[in-house]
Length: 140
Ligand code: 5GP
Ligand code: ZN
Image 1 (cartoon, rainbow, N blue to C red):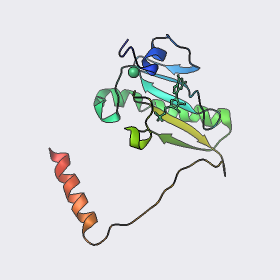
Image 2 (tube, helix red, strand yellow):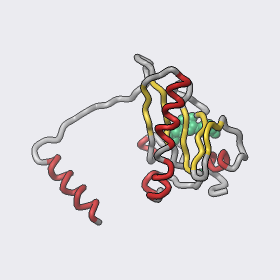
Image 3 (cartoon, rainbow, N blue to C red):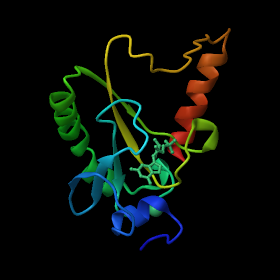
Image 4 (cartoon, rainbow, N blue to C red):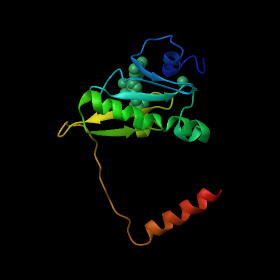
């Protein structure tokens, strides 16, 4: 048990049930208990990490191939031909379970899902400033 208070750690350990669909040495996938659409699947690392940026590169590299593999299965079973991968970090971003998880959400035309995408634009030099700050931050 990584974090005895964590609901996803309890699922990993089999202490609470879940509709498990895939598992390997490092990750587990199961159906979301509150699906946004039938087939809505969660992929989690078996180890307890709260946020994406805490995960070691090697672990992410092990999990990454599972996304397209599961996505193909979700599409085949649901008949959808579109899907979102959603991954929330921090409460303002919508994270409710503090154990890293990736949502695979099958989408249908006009299914009513989605969120406000209030696109804005950079004024003046603002975009260049951000890009330069980010480039500098990536070097530290
Ligand atoms: P978040 O908002 O943190 O990105 O998403 C958390 C997701 O976990 C939600 O979609 C919620 O329905 C799902 N979830 C929360 N508790 C459980 C649980 O005990 N079992 C399963 N299968 N899913 C859960
Ligand atoms: Zn956990």
